[in-house]
Image 1 (spheres, helix red, strand yellow):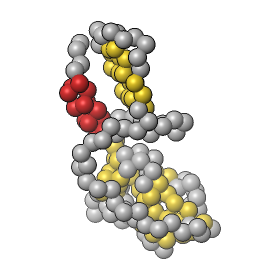
Image 2 (cartoon, rainbow, N blue to C red; image 1 turned 120 degrees about the vertical axis):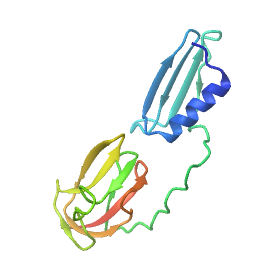
Image 3 (tube, rainbow, N blue to C red; image 1 turned 90 degrees about the vertical axis):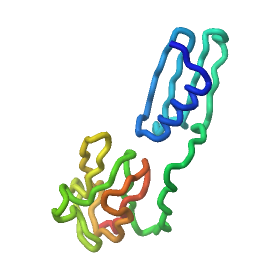
Length: 159
């Protein structure tokens, strides 16, 4: 398998638009490893060609990709509130199905372990459970909206 510069750029752009966290690809004359959103390290890209086996390129940040949509503006953080954040890139849903009541409402009380939303990633529905009990003060994301890793979904005043 051969991989030229344009193909590499296209592959990295596609990866930037997906929620794939790690990719390893090997060909006859190269090895490519891409990792991102790992808790212990900064995003890295390693490319090694057999023509220069000692040469390893490492980037501290992902390559620029044309923005598909600007991320939603972050609301100001309040010190007395705890933030519920997205653990993955996904689509945010407030209820289990269209037409059903939302899991939580502003002003409502939640308990530890209670489902607060559903995050859909790659056709898998993941229930996000609260790690804190208290009163929901803000819900910052609209139903059906794509969310980024680490994006604040809601704020809770702990009980």
